[in-house]
Image 1 (cartoon, rainbow, N blue to C red):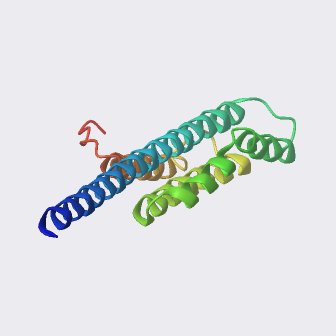
Image 2 (cartoon, one colour):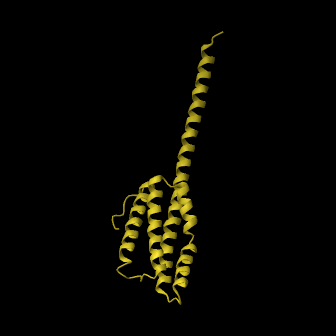
Image 3 (cartoon, rainbow, N blue to C red):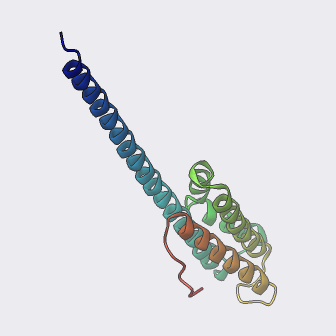
Length: 159
């Protein structure tokens, strides 16, 4: 009996199966990477949006009239809580790479510094608020730059 045709067929089958498995694995890895990128994009968008909303909310509250210092403090703190920033922050901590999480944390803490200043009665457009606002803008710009890099999007060069 001639074994060569049988061995050739068997070798061809093994090569075909191996090639199919490798192709399926590569396709699966690409799909997983694409999915992970989409998840990060969603989390980044949620976090940046919550930071922006928090900033706008505390500014609006700080510009309002309050009967007492404690009422102002409570209103500013509640304004931040109502934006979903804490949930968005936790999501960022779960899926973001370390450099993005660190930048997001800095942006978050810079917002909290403004919140605390407004809660103490610092006026929105005062000289005391200016460095806090500058710190927040710089932190937000750095965070956005790192998020864009992670998503494979080029820099804006407008901030």
